[in-house]
Image 1 (cartoon, rainbow, N blue to C red):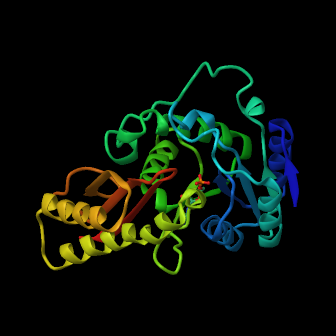
Image 2: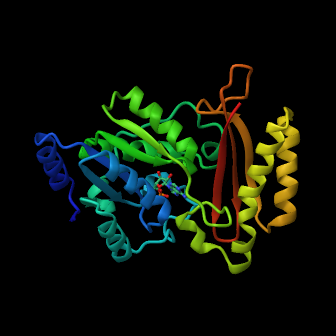
Length: 281
Ligand code: AMP
């Protein structure tokens, strides 16, 4: 496994792999790896000749009041985990390498951003899309792997790939959970002992909503209220949003809707957690 820190070297290596007709699978992350990330790596390993992992905490996708400076980092640990999984390259650039000057061009995501995390984290998806344009150009993967825990991100990146004509296939990967249902996340380390005990309520509330819908409840507001009440009584967290839309369009549900996403974000004292369930209508 090679660790590459410069754009130039990464680009050259990928061109060389390409010349040998190697299929390149790519897993973009912000590091502090957990089993959710590893499931993306495993899938890439099983479907490609080469797997590239990038570790980059992208300042552009954090708001001024968000957790950029405290975002958990441990490169040595990530290195060992990636090595064990058989990753071929880790791209590990510095902020200065990726943004030597203030960017003169930024990507602006126009649709699907007035809901869910797009609404509560203004500019977040512009930052994600901008760094991905750079990373896709540097790495030139055949397939890119994203987790459905960030389902809005999957929908936005699918749009980016289509609109900018990247010859890349996006592979969405199911959310990996702890035994009690809590979605694995790098931010879970910031939960206090008490909050950690409460956190499985997020997934429970999603399952409850799914059950309601499957039982024929069509009143979205009623379901959301039910979830809010459940989270209020089972956690000390503050609900940031609970929303239900068509997926991947992220629009109000209509007769023609095929898939529905029930998504939420809850703020605990030091961590904002998100989760969702996608169901067939
Ligand atoms: P992050 O490092 O948080 O930017 O995540 C990198 C990638 O891992 C993203 O595509 C996430 O959606 C994915 N991911 C994060 N948590 C999970 C999880 N619990 N299960 C599956 N994928 C995940």
